[in-house]
Amino acid sequence: MDLENQLLKNLASVLPQPLYREVENAIREMDRGRALELVYRVLRQYLTSLVDPGEAIGIITAQSIGEPGTQMILRSFHYAGLREFSMARGLPRLIEIVDARRTPSTSLMFIYLKPPHNKSREAAESVAKKIQQVTLEMLSKVVDVDYASSTITISIDQEQLKYRNLTIRDVEKVLSKAKGKDVNITIRGHTVIISLTTPDILKIRKIYEKILQIKISGIKGVKKVVLQYDSKNDEWYIITEGTNLEAVLQLEEVDAARTYSNDLHEVEEVLGIESARALVAREVQRVLQEQGLDVDVRHMYLVADAMTWSGRVRPIGRHGIVGAKESPLAKAAFEVTVKTLVEAAIRGETENFKGVVETIIAGKYVPVGTGIVKLLMKF
Amino acid sequence: MPLGVKEVVVIEREEAKALLRQLRLKPWQLPWIRSSDPLVKMVGAKVGDVVKIVRESQTAGESVVYRFVVPG
Image (cartoon, rainbow over all chains, first blue to last red; front, side):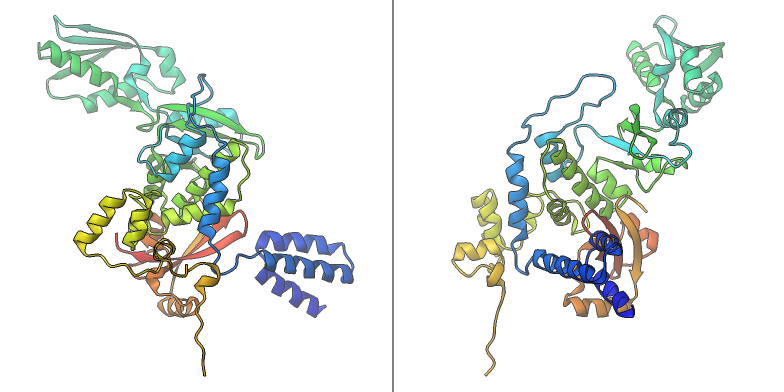
């Protein structure tokens, strides 16, 4: 019995956890001989499936993502409708991720909630209301600007106020905090009267536009909020257009371990480089899955690792990973050959012939596969 | 713990040395993490430390990576 336990323990240290658990479950029902046979076969299969030292995994990843990529939607069209966001998908989104664009075409936040807030639509909705940015414009029914007497009259929609759980008091508070020196604000019932001292029409116009954009409640930058139901985990979560992760994570109802946005740089800044890595892998996987393409996650992991090993998110290309290469020949072989070579010459860079590209150019043995092994004879 | 991360710890100097010897690496050959990174701040690691990060992985369940804390 002890021997078997020892065997299982050793097996656990060799096999990855999910595989080990599967074996463990399968063995339970079996007699000793069959169990040993199974363990033996799994172990042999696993060890032969491992990647060999020197395997050119980068090339394999490039091919494995590149070939299915030819079958993706080349241009994405945006959905119209209330429920869906117009989100880039297919190749455009893939390019966005790999190039690590500053701002994605639509930045979304996926906000998961702690129980009990995620269990019912009502509970999730009340959190959503807290998050969505409410401007004065959204609350107002009629806005009237009188240039002759320099006054702006805004009548507030009471139903909107009620729906957003606000009172006229909240509006008053925000406005009195935001007002400047030569502005006078009076509130009569549900009408806000703003009288200005300047007779300048352009100035009044400017102030008018500014006032309507004043944030009354919610989180800055969150433009649109949609509730979604996840039937697999029986929970409600929130998708928002416009992101502000830092502010959202401060809310106590929000589950910070799962909440993320699709903006790589924001995630890098707020959650750290490890989360950015996870996001790259997850987003690439999502894009490919949406198109019905089946690519192993390990390829995504490799791309994500390559983009994030330096502690920052770097694009793949001459401004990022390739541009950071040491070898001038490898850089020149990628893009803008002449400029790269001229710059290398000006700086007096040296070529060490250590990488793959430059050794191919020089016709030497490539440090890949069997070429990576160096042997010295000992007499 | 933020997205994709299960555990973060700073590794003692001695332990880090032993680890690097075992992997036959210089510290800068590990993946880097900037000292301004939220994870680094959370565990209070200093520049030159090695942090151990346990990641979620779809293939391995959990996987362990070491990152070298660099200035920035």
